[in-house]
Image (cartoon, rainbow, N blue to C red; front, side):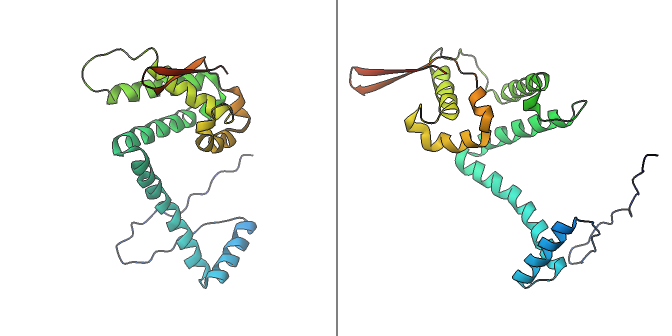
Length: 194
């Protein structure tokens, strides 16, 4: 017989300045870690749990601030939107999963990115460069796939390569070309193929 979930009390809205009780169950390992941390920090178990929960909410603000600093507020909003859409696609799949593990969900994520970019597109028209966009993205992808391949991006790419693990080796990258003007009229051409 299937076990039914027991409903708890209805959540009560807290008023400013009021302390509220919070009931939760944790594993023995978490309880022991919480007790150890509380003792080390001179807090009660409740104070330690509250401090740790509060810290998780602060982390969201830190991420947004860091993205604003790194990319500017408009691009940060676009990246947050794209990330959220991709995660939501995986959650709303018939069998919730990571969108990167299923081809059909991956295609849904691509469609979401295209729609997000279209929503941010400025008025006017123009054709993308046949050289600039592929040169930039393919070089970045090549660096992530093999950080030693693109030495000037190694410091940036190595941690990203490590995060991807085995998936880094599966990146599909077209031929890329980098043209650099060494001095007026003297160019260096560098090619890569992954």
